[in-house]
Image (cartoon, rainbow, N blue to C red):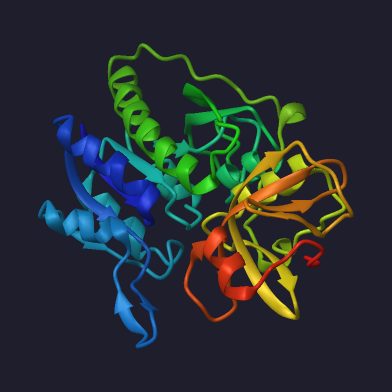
Length: 305
């Protein structure tokens, strides 16, 4: 099929590559504008743009999809279908209805659960045991279109949102190729979503980061996993912020928020405790918890708050 691909971050790179490998013609790629990054604020292209240029595919980066310019470009391209993966812009009705096969989205959850911008992170934050990817026909609502195909996977007990992100990107790549074949061959039956079973996964904010050590060990562990690799769970130790990147649950007890063992570094929660594996002290690089204990003289009874 002749495809226009719309996507922006790392998550959208694998699906684009898989579509190209599958023999489809990618007429063009739409992605977000370049943004300043790093200490020098150098203008940096989105990962999908870099991928597209590697394959010699033309790239458009409209600031708006609603001023008529994007519609004009798409009308001239005449795609059979528009594939949208984590693009980050709302498509107006005229664009949604333009292609022969409409616009097909890859969403990183088992819809109708976790509609919205942060499905991967919230599935981990909420302690879900399974998740997956769903392809759907796009509608004007937020992730409310008719579902096409699904692929399911278990979430590992210590798996972080960052690790799950990478796995779901690969699963999404495989699923979109299967979906395109099924749509072209008319072998898929779209299914309506049950709005009563829906839930919302908003964008993450830094307000979520502070750890409440009075919560259960499982809840603390889920927070650390779900906020890795951004915006990262945070606690305060001796007046300094400490980012915590990975933990595991320990079958220990003690005074809430205090270190009950230095090796491995273990902090008591509302019921059990968590072992801390990797941290980043304020203003420093990421290090192992063992190095942190040695370098910052963390002892039993030290309070994490």
